[in-house]
Amino acid sequence: MSSPLSPTPVNDSALRLFELITTSWVSAAVGAAAELGIADAMSQTPTPVDQIAKRVGADTDALGRLLRACADLDLVAEPSTDVFTLTELGAALRTDSPTPCAATPAG
Image (cartoon, rainbow, N blue to C red):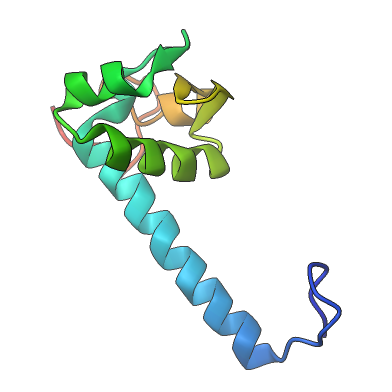
């Protein structure tokens, strides 16, 4: 088996380890976003990361890294550098969402 990103063959163990590592950061990113209430602090209007950080009481640089990870998961979009919008998928993390997800903290 080989990865489309590398001409080097990837064995099943290496692929499974990669999946475990990826699952871990995905869970951590979604959990942190839910715990911080990022979706509630955002809208579908582009908002600079420093404004979001003030709303949730987070460090701007750390929140920027988290939001970029969330952009990889399609929870938010980054239409320009350090400016983010909530996606339809990310809106499910809002406490007032009509389709709340299990990661959303109880309000």
